[in-house]
Figure 1 (tube, rainbow, N blue to C red):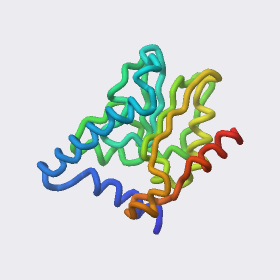
Figure 2: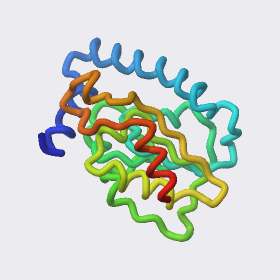
Figure 3: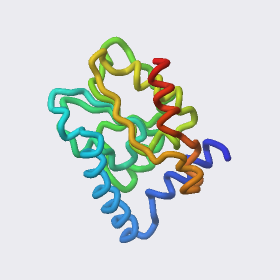
Length: 171
């Protein structure tokens, strides 16, 4: 399956033509996001003075639930999502192509259920790790082996905690 197929499957999972079904999906996702904030301890982090980077936030990024100084959400489908919901702070691009600069020092980088959807997850992790300050945090959540346990065209890669730890050790 191509990366284009992955993007098409992902956008179709959000831009459901039936408005009632789409709103139900949004409701389910938002409820799940509160749990993710707690599970990742983001509610204990004190993000009010942080600059936040979120990768693959979709139309309803988890960072919507945080207080922050500034935020950038990178998602290649942001322009598609804007057709049905406002997407403030979104940049429509692949995270692999994000180029940080010296003044792009984020205090927190988040990726929830998105690394298995990108074209090159190790490159995205590298981008995240290089985009945070020396005392910054990376928060990652995702289902292990999601492409095996929950087959879907948008689940492009099988990731495990060991894989992510390996990337962290390299960076």
